[in-house]
Image 1 (tube, rainbow over the protein chains, first blue to last red):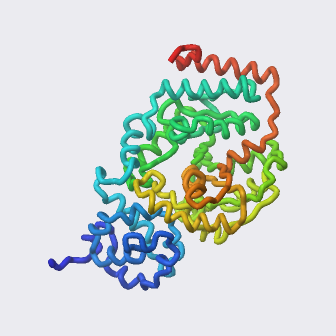
Image 2: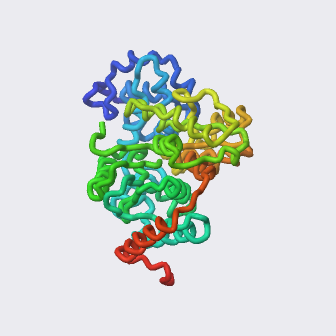
Image 3: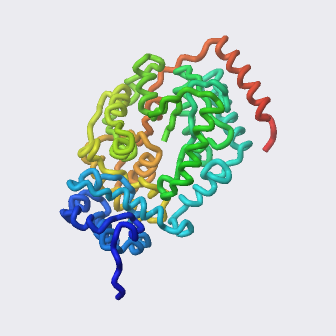
Length: 230
Length: 184
């Protein structure tokens, strides 16, 4: 076995070897984590791996992905070890084509087509109009429609793509509230995605781009309030 | 922090609408014992990132709609994740996700609540579509805004308001090329 050099500069996870002393290995983190034991892992062992230079082993393991990044371990840690940060960074360092499940594909889709599920603009606009017509004519909300790209609206609202894709009627919950509140609101015809999967895939660059799009909407439409209904 | 725009989560807006009387709520619609789930991202993680956690707002909003309210334990900063967070809902590790959720399922069971309110899409999906089934919870699960929407006292708009909205709608559909009569 080859000896490994451990220092902050060489650590992919940016964990200094001193962390081995900072962490008392008390197990508070592990004791409060619902997935302790899965794959023989827990947050305490993850931090120990990082402090001992086993960066790549941690990055390649399933643990950073089975962990839900809930942050309970870090909140409870008496020594202030940034467990959550290390685990998310382990996600960032996973090769993009090895990110489990659809979250990286969703990020790419969002960057290319404006939402995680690739719903085209015309389908989206038709769906909104169709649902609004149901509310207007059959469900007791006469006059309701979905204002799109409305300049000067008070509230700009993003949309979770799973709703237009699979649970379209669920969009009506907020619409009914806006109707009753007589809110002056709007959403966008494109780039309306409210779910930033870069947060979970560990992709900070993509996150910035996607947040930037929302800022662009706010500037372009001169809205006063941004509602992120996630 | 955000000087140019006001950025709000679901909590501030719902609370504001109720508090200022912009929407009216019928408290008699939801009689069943109800509890709320604290999403990690609105609690611990929001507190860490922005110095602000949303614990009291969802409780206040829920109790405007529900007479019978009960807390899960532990809650707020020490709340347990539903098990579907961090992208786990979309991850291919279903068995691990369900195993993770056993703690949340037990918390819910211990309250005896028949309805669980979730202020987060992800938590709602995990509790409603997975935990409810896997652990036979026999509960109803609603988004916080779904609870409010289902509690609304709806006062339809006036003729004048409807006319104005119809005009704006028609102009928008014209601009965007939306034609509902078109065959698909």
